[in-house]
Image 1 (tube, rainbow, N blue to C red):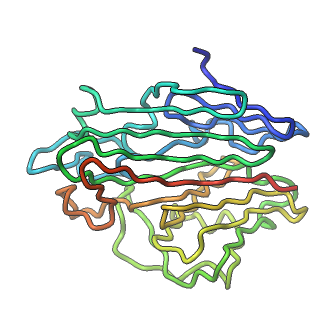
Image 2 (cartoon, rainbow, N blue to C red):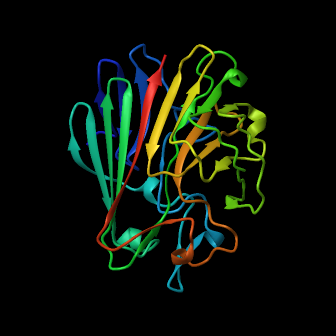
Length: 286
């Protein structure tokens, strides 16, 4: 199996790694790359976050009183998915619990990820399956890093939400959720990007009114995102990196006082034998 699986249409080409089911490159018909190429500032491109987002206290989760080591953002981004189906413009990848995953997360689960390319539009579907006899607590996120700037000056790029977003946002410290609430940085529906916005790290919007946004440069070039199942949006960049992450989240980073995973109200809780579906549709503009 090649390191990267290629999906191709006349209008764009997507490369996906079976490691983490992660998109690694998305080039339009003019040869322009839209995803950050895992450079020195950040060695990733568009990972999946599961079954936790950010860190957990002492880097371990507690389930029914027993502690299990858990790395930042969970183990999925380092896991090798099985390729269940592959065609010219669609790939289905699957991950199931194993002896290795149960050392960190003591549940029987399945995660299927489908990437489908239609022209310049990528639809990614995540299906979480609870194969356990207990309720499955988890967070799920997609963490794509888009090229910034696309063209023109960085601070002329904006993120336009579908609806006004006046609610306060959150921050993390040492990748655990801080208690403070911060005034919204969205003016009406528009958030103007700047490096100063990220001086204290990620901008975490836990419960957005919108189910879509548009990231665009002054020229009109950009990316349109629409989602279902996800409830929050997080923006992040790192010094020295020419990218901005526009992340869809279901769940939040843990608070320093969070211990028992089953008691966390910010997570999704899936009953035994059930599945839950989340989607993100990304379209290249301009």
